[in-house]
Image 1 (spheres, one colour):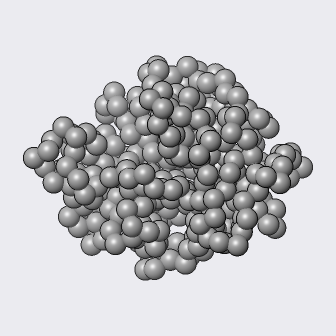
Image 2 (cartoon, rainbow, N blue to C red; image 1 turned 60 degrees about the vertical axis):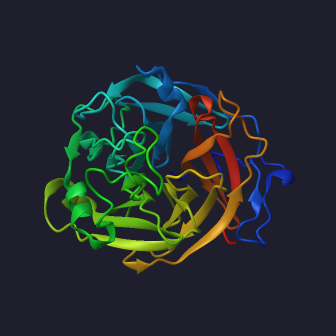
Length: 346
């Protein structure tokens, strides 16, 4: 999402601005105190600690969509400087399971989209076809819950057909390189796992946490209309150098380019989270630059005292020098929203 500077004033002190001299320079948040949240009343209480996607309609911060990777609900919230507030009750998503691993949300101005992870279950490697859908519904200026939500399984068919995902899709395609927690007899196969989606120029781009091989993350683009209505999907797969054992954790749009939140792949090693700018999200090697790493040293911790894990980013504002990003995290209560000012150039 993108908002004008007149509506969202950058309040950061100089100490919260990260230098731009080095690509991986640590960037602290404006404040280590999260924004206030009046949370949606999700049916599953732990959904509040498992926020996985967030997007606002263009130029409409009072109409934002939030999704979680627990349960099968989504909700609308309004955004104001310093906080988020629920709009009405959460609404059910049309998936064939009581659990849906929603892992990203985006909009093209006409529709809102929710991406399922397409993955097997993390701890057991059990097949979970309910994850293999992408959802679409109308942007409603009246801010009402969607009446009709269209679901498609075409993305999974595209993934299965592409050589870049051979050996990483389907039953027993366990996530990461290591065996799943509850099935030590099964090897990790860097299984397919989507964790971000963004709409740009009539296409949907899906960012993958897995497979992540040889320090490269994958970005799959398809024609948005064809995905839901038939026709030529024209898939493209771009490779982005992000570093060993790292992968894409979310996507958003900024000034015509993709911003990617990059963090640990599915083996979840204790690595930095960074923001990358992707200039050419097309076939082959994409032009991408690491803008900064997020300094989470003094950020809130989860209930076990472990660091929170950034899961969703949204563009609040852009100046010629910086992107002002809202970051929501897994493990933090209600996403523990923090704001970071990221240099536009490394």
